[in-house]
Amino acid sequence: MSHAVVPAALRFWLRLFEHLERFFHSIPSVIWIAILPIISVIHCGYELSMPYAGVANFTGTFPTPLSGSDSGSYGIRTIAWLLQVDEPDSYTRLCVLITIATLWIVGALLFRVLSKRSAIVVSVLIVLGPIGETLFGAIGRSDVFVLLGALVLGVVGRNIWIGFIAGLIMVAGNPEQAVAASLAFVLVALALRAPGIVRAAVSSLVISCIAYFAMLAWFEHMGYISRVDSLGPNIRQSLSFFLQAAPISFYAAFGLAFVFVVIACTVLWWRRALLLILGIVLIPMFFTAITLDQTRITVALSCAGIAAVLVWSVPKCLQGLDALGFGSGMSLLTIIAVALPSIAVSYPGDIILPYKTGVEQFFNPAAGS
Image (cartoon, rainbow, N blue to C red; front, side, top):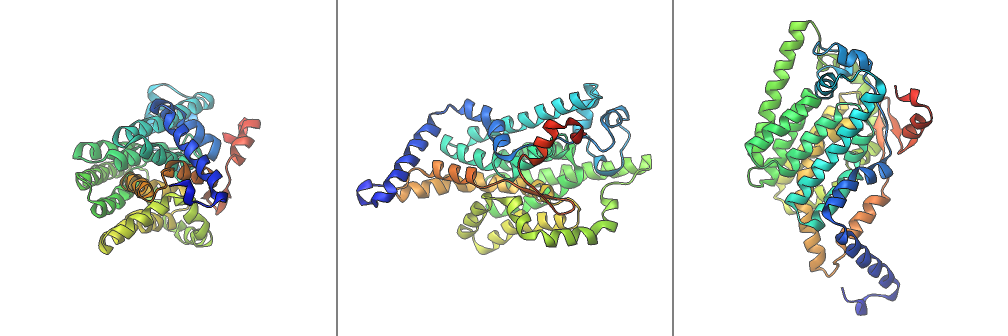
């Protein structure tokens, strides 16, 4: 955009965006990938979480099923058992490393499949938004595997085998969520119709369903009930919490990324746009409404669809801004993402602000156990 036709009051900001654009682009890709966990923690804060059964019981009773929220989540439990992790400090270190590695893997995949400009924008939207908040807001819980599998599926899920692998990763975190997330992503895939994406989505759904029913058979054999069986008595209470916090929950679950969902809907045929909304918004929020957990469920179930939409739409948006003469779209979107706060809504309808719990746990480590 020529500065000659721009009001003087805007020239400073245009120059600032141009300088930021050049600065962001000058940072090597490997450095961007390396600092993704750092900028996510700085923006979103963190919270440490221990298994409800206690670390020693969590690993010491493997592979016997556990009751409550830890049941069926065998990813972290298996790794902790193999490494003989049986105390809170070592468990926390393990989970922090897994969380950091998750963002490194996703960052590497983004810079592999997208241009550098697009990869920077998509990675920033992921780590500074609800996905980053959910990752670092529940360090130690199974969410990390669900989100890793969903992000792999959304970013590079373009063939049967990647869909199979992504589905298995999600199952390692939570088989029930893996089924629901894969089902939602099938609708997103049908809407976007990127090459191979439908095959990947169906592959993920099939392996998730097989794993889920295998888990049910294992639980029945061992005399335990699954998490799904415990939903019934809590549905009314969950619906009440969901309706009370619905507006703030929507922002907490989607953040700035939802703008790109809307943009995608405007360029798709209306039936495909409806599939997109079903897969990213309605199905995840339906399951959220009937479970006591709030933001983390919506994020987990919509994550693959959000990632796929960002990979699909961000390059087009940057090209559109370039065509309008505004070549600083990367820096503009990054600044907006930084400016928007990351929050979460959890049971029983509490609004979680960045840093609050993390700071309390830093000064009082016993609070995280």
